[in-house]
Picture 1 (cartoon, rainbow over the protein chains, first blue to last red):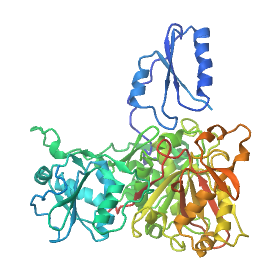
Picture 2: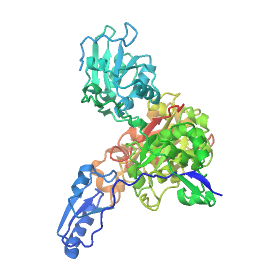
Picture 3: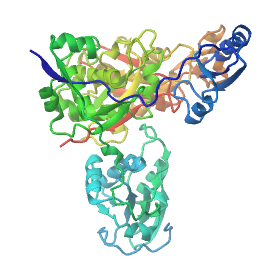
Picture 4: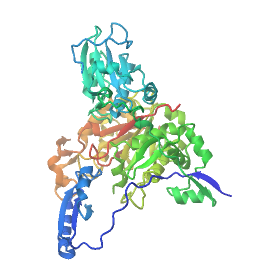
Length: 92
Length: 511
């Protein structure tokens, strides 16, 4: 015997599909998104060097969220679209 | 727009002749107009003549008046004749008219100072409290008569407060439904299976498709049906929807910033504080064991919110909810204030709601930090003990970034009140006596790199940094049982407009 229950979970479809994953970082433009946590720059400086030296990334740009406590503003997200990859970098 | 000194146009708005009145232009889908309503109700309840002018249809206006519990008349100006005559550029627009029919003041948008000035000019008391959780100012929406006209447009303006979502799908379960629900939807304690019958009873005739909010961080659609299904699972009785719907709306309020609260590595979880007559009606406990497993109402309301945050908000504890250590509050965290035995006005009255109104307050909270003080016999003695606990909120040496909710036990509250302290005196005393000695800052650690932002203060002869930004960062609630000289301090997550702000919503009658 079965019973019928009401689905209590979210059933909205995601509005966008996940971006395709890159096969290689070589020659790509990568943006590092600093979420404004203390120490973020220390981590990102090192990461930026590694991306260029070890993975031959062509161009590394930096963007910063105004605060780590809230989602990024739409304008900032739009800027990120100009790159092949985004690395959102936490810190602490 | 009509200005101070102008004679007002002649319309039959039915104010009592020879008395000044406040005319308020409103739109039913304007969030700022809704924000203004509790303050206007407060003014009207003090006997001031308030007349609303709605720029929408009678149907929408009736619904608006019901949802906002309007206690003053609202004229329907759907043909915008009155609006064109007064010509406000935006709503809400406030026009204070003197007894002889001249405009005394005209103002656009929500502004607490302006509302208090209007109340004062009408000979009434303050209606807008600075620290009630609402912003000091907020712009409104363009007045309907200035919107581009479109001869093809015939539909009613979109009422975002009555947006309709989709019906929930049905799931056929052929295995043990308790095992199934616990595995698929649980927290992970057993839940009551949300059968169609149970969910119907929980909704009590409300529209299942009505959207109450979009729940961060994944913005799932919280329709009344989805909320009811989670309420059933949590074990709520059907009457609980009267409180749960405003709880969900408060949880989705941007000021609470659930997006951050649910994703942070910190301990924060939303604490619900219930105030007003609804406590008795639905059986909320506010005495002994108030934070624990004492009453079905407290436990199930808190749990219903947590299930909603997980099932609709997507805050999976193995995924997007990144809390390092978590918090037992993520099973359920709900208290009610012991208003009957408190020596002071309860939290919601302090925030400007009526004593006969019921409210829910949400606060992004750490677990309660107990304060035992059995030897102090004076208000100052008790409060000093509490201030020592308050100094440790977030991290001992981190100042200015957090808030605290102080839950005073009854014995402490009586001792403090017995020395003549009003609630604001308690807040002021705790603000001025909570600090970290500057000698504690001689090595590196959380909070030591930001001392240039801190305020210096002398506490008992010692130079300290003040813990909180202002007395408004300290909220006070009285709760608990009659025996035991205990209180609790509850720290917040990152506070203020960039973090999470406490929010309070009224519980309107659903029928």
